[in-house]
Structures are given as structure tokens and as C-alpha cells.
Image (cartoon, rainbow, N blue to C red; front, side, top):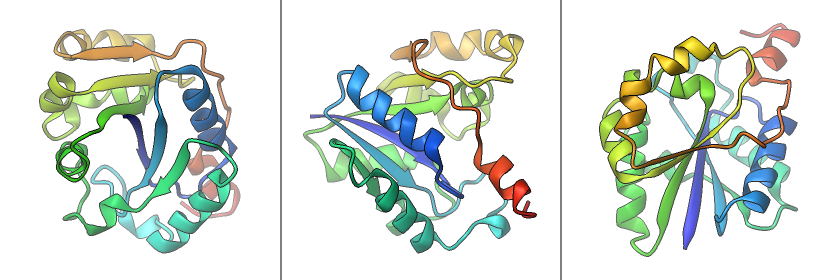
Length: 176
């Protein structure tokens, strides 16, 4: 079974996350798409996160009617902070019959070389990259050596663009 891993803090989950998840499950070869709620992303300030169980429940509610898409608390039982390479290893061990594909935004591709063991991820997993406006083309081109190490990177050029972010929602609410 081909499973997409769309990880994030989902702080909060919004229609951009949900719309992209639905588009990916409908327009790629994935059998399932798991939105992995990250309890502690090492590149984000944990102090601004809503409680993990609240974020998980919000994601479950948001995707409950989308066939093939589910919320996952898989990282909740892993050591913290959550490193994608560790999560992917643990997923392979827990689900040996699955082929995992990582789903990231262009903004994350631009900083992928800051991720722990990014070379391992690129050598061993497919990566689907969705468009993010405001991501400088030069930032992506600067990662050409990173991209060359990839097993298989697919740019989801036809994916819809959602002009929203969790950061902008938090700021509109007077939060960080």
C-alpha cells in the first residue's frame, strides 16, 4: 500500500491543509494519506503550540469525510523533538507492507538541508512537493545539490494554492 505522510503541527489545521490533502489523495497514486500531527517540531517554538490532543482532534474532525485521508498520532509515542527521518524509520518498522511518500511544501524543500538526516530521507523515500507562494525560486535552485540526492522528488505543480497559513491565523487571533 502506498501511504503519503503529510506531517505538521497543524496549529491550527485549516482549509489549506484539508484542501491539499484531498487534492493529493485524488490526483496521485497514493492509497492513503496520513496527516501526522507533530507534538514537537524541532524547527518551531513548542511554547506556541496548542495541546497535541486538541490539535489531533481538530485534524480528525477536519478530514473525517475525506475517503483515504486520516489523522495520525503516530509521533506522539516517539522521542521528542520529532525528526522526520526517525518517524519514517519507525513507520517502516510498524508498517512493513507500506511504501511511504513524504509530502512537503516548497518552503521546506528550500531548507531541507537543515533537516536531520535529510540525505537518508532523499535516498529512501519519494517526496511530493507542493507549491508555496512566497518561496523564492533562488532558494529552491540553491538546493540543487540536495535535490540530486533524491530517490524521487515530484513537484505537484497542478496542486491548488491555498493562500492561508497557521501562522497568519494565529497572528489574526493575537497569538504568535
